Image (tube, rainbow, N blue to C red; front, side):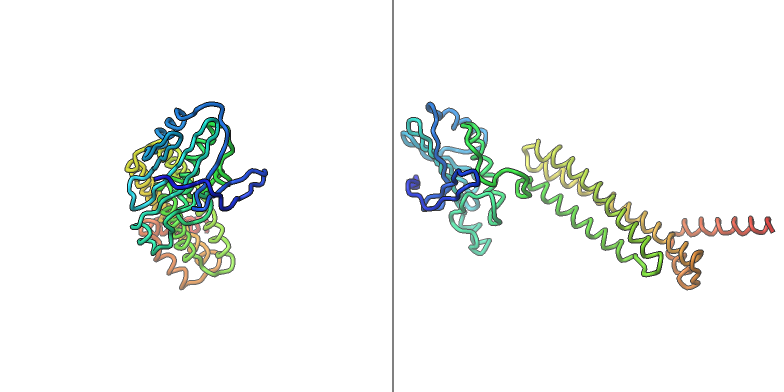
Length: 298
C-alpha cells in the first residue's frame, strides 16, 4: 500500500537555496523534471542496489530493501508522470528492533544523514538515493557526502574499535612503568610517545589495508570479518612483541640511571633483578670485561 506523499509538512532549506522536503509522515521527498520516461533507469538502479519492487501502479512503483522486516526496511516510492518525477523514501523499523532498543527508535525512521539513531542504515539509504539523483544530474541529499564513521563497513568498525582498545591498553601499560625520578621520567615519557606513535602507525597501515583492500572490494560479509580477525591478530601479536621489547629497554634505562648515573644500591639491584635472565647475564659479562680492562690499565 502506498503512503500519501502529496501533503508537505516542513522544509529544510539548504545553503545554496535548494530545499530538502518532508511530508506529513516524515518521509524524505524530492521532485524534479526529466525529458523522457525513465523507468528503465529506475529498474537498473533497483537491481544494482538490491531493491525489490513490492507494489506497482500505472505511474508509480514502490521498492523496498531489507532482508528481515523485524529490523530495518528501507522504502523508496517513485512517482513518474509524464516529465515529472517525485521520490519519497523512509525507513520502517521492525517491532523486534524497537523492543530491543526499549522503543527508543520510532516506527518510521526519517531519512536523514545526520544524528545517531539508526545512522548506518539512514546513511546507506541516502547513498542509494544519491545514486538516483546523480543519474538525473540532481544535487545529492544535504550533508550526505563527505567522510563519516557510519559509512564504514561493520568489519572495519569492529577492527578499528579493537585497535583503539589495544593502543589504549598498550599506552596504559607503558605509562605504569614511568618512574618519577629527575632526568629518568622525561626520558621514559619521550620513549613512550615515540612507541605509541610507532604502534599507532602500524595499526593505521593495517587498518587501511583491510578497509580499502578487502572491506570495500569484497561483497561477502564473512570474508570481511575473517580479514578483520586476521588483521586484529597480527596487530595484537606485533603490539605484544613491541611491548616485550620496550619493557627490556625501559629496564636497561633504569639500570643505567640508578647504577651508573645516580647510584642507588636498592633501586639498582631491583632494576637488575627485573631484567630478563639473558640480558642480566650479558650485563654481568660486560661488567666483568670492563673490570678486567680497568685492571689491565692500572
